[in-house]
Image (cartoon, rainbow, N blue to C red; front, top):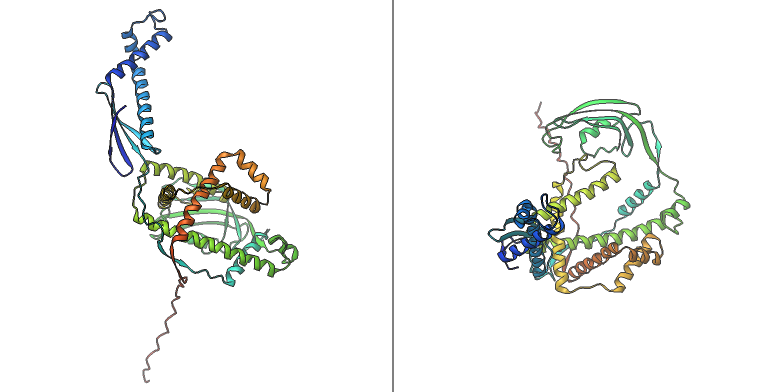
Length: 439
């Protein structure tokens, strides 16, 4: 089947195919003959119905069948010719009498990325401070702490179980929950709401209206929101005894707090270096995106937004017991990050093809060993799992290929180390001296 094509956008191509009338007639005849031989037509013996009767009675079926076959044939030919995967296609025009078929197909735009090596970026110098290690130790200590019943009053880090919770926002269905657990902090948003929780005690009943202003989140902006609830259980974390038993649980083999702090310092430094590298690679891709602008196909973008939002929503429900909608996180708020992620992956794939990078068996073996070590399981167990789950193995291979591209960009970049920016605190101005009156 012959066709012509027209580039509409950098991601969109229109294909116009001319259909042979002889081929259409032959397909119609073949379908009619098949229907005559296989179907019983009222008033006629099987195989004896006239062609014109069958053509009239099954007209819609015949045309749909020919359309489907023609579309499939054209689509397969385009995919073979273009040597790339379509992201979305739509039928614009199909006319058997005119012998014309027009479809539009979205692809990821063609790229011609050049000068991706040796890009100049700034990287913040790593500064490991004692306060970083102290904070890490404190956070781990909290993980070994246990929740204990607490009478009140509410203060930072106290878990409050709000019972018979009711939130009434104008223009929305009232939000009701039998139990709504929150951890109090005076820095949490909306501050007006958390401000009402401070100093409450167990069994307190609370009802109030908050008059949100222009600076509130979109959901509450310029609205009067009514709340009511009863304070159920209050819980406060009780820190464990800092002894050798605890230290050995924190870090295998540790016998003292000093052992734990040293290991934490080493881990923080290692993780900080990895995070520093990730940030630098992200800067490199930001430069490449700016130098190589292209449009993410809109229908593909919408599909990806749906998939990411659904996936993240499940994580929020599992981790926080609330949906993203309940937390006022919209799908559109994720658009910029999703667009950037799609563009990074497309540029990464292009560089991968240019460099002809491949992964070796030793690359996979090293990754398996790392997975085994970090999860404290046998190497044979890891290999067995991935060898029987090919989709997971493909994910590992794709991640390794992506890492090779990122390593190539990072190792070739011209990196200038800079000191972290320190925000200057405004010093209070000295009070003005009163003028002496001479009285």
